Image (cartoon, rainbow, N blue to C red):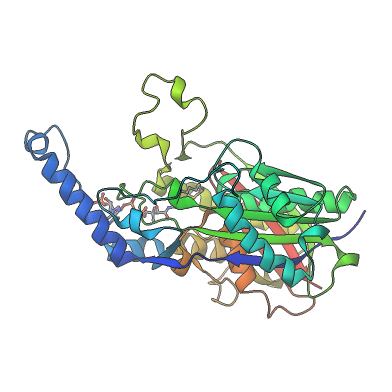
Length: 373
Ligand code: CO8
């Protein structure tokens, strides 16, 4: 058995930013246009008029101030409301691979490794741009890595589930150096025309290098243990999939082809599930909550994180104990807790213990207890 460690992380941040104000202007222009187009039906009571969105609501309800996206113009075009991506030929790297490789380059550099050292690539994300061949295998080729690669999707929990899979394989000796990469192009499957959720997500890619402690070249975090749990719920759902064209209205612009959620229910049900999960994991690991130096939580909603932190620590966590990045990135699905870890872990001292935790659709929750070596 080998001790798995995290020896490098990387974040690729797209260059384009959409502020809440910009997003709301585009949404409201779309709503006005739809209301004008459907004026008769609305007047006849056959349709409900669309209401305006508000920056104030977005910030108060979520804590989000802006989001990075790969393509801004298409999203803010009120006659379109989703990004414009160039059609790539099958011989070119896909968009997920392109951004994944950028995050991998930073993570590998931090670990003092090159792509050829890697013998496992897990592409763990909340949606894949194609069914097969696996995006991970394309990333493996781009890295010049050996071994094997595979895709996995556990929505927002994909990164921690991927870390558990990689850490278990490193521990068992079946792989030596793994990279878990989370290219999240959420702008492609967010419904930007839905007032209830149009503000929630942003694009990013993160990568985490996991290898044997004895091989680690620089600063690293020992993976003390991991815990994953799932419990079926329809409250976050996307019905797009390969059976689509076989359905009677298969190719229609149906709402359920994009991200859908009952946000209120998610909030209420996931907060206790995650708090209990973290407390159980810490207890099984023999770590008292007050021994935790830092928690890097999934970045969906600031109030949600405040509740979870308070439940775990028994008091309000400080910003240093529980850093958020969602004000800048919004919810980046599986990448959120890894962005927080990557940007807020350099100051951890040897012996400091921290916890990475992600949660979301499924429902799913994954946690990783790490200790700075
Ligand atoms: N502007 C102004 N007012 C608004 C807006 C808006 N944009 N949206 C809603 N309102 C109004 C509503 O109409 C409602 O008005 P009224 O009280 O008159 O009926 C009022 O505001 C309150 O609405 P809500 O109850 O919906 O608002 P909440 O306070 O619950 O906040 C949130 C909404 C922010 C969505 C909150 O519920 C939340 O964050 N919940 C948790 C969500 C979450 O964590 N989801 C996880 C999803 S991520 C995941 O698992 C990965 C999925 C895969 C990735 C997909 C990528 C696209």
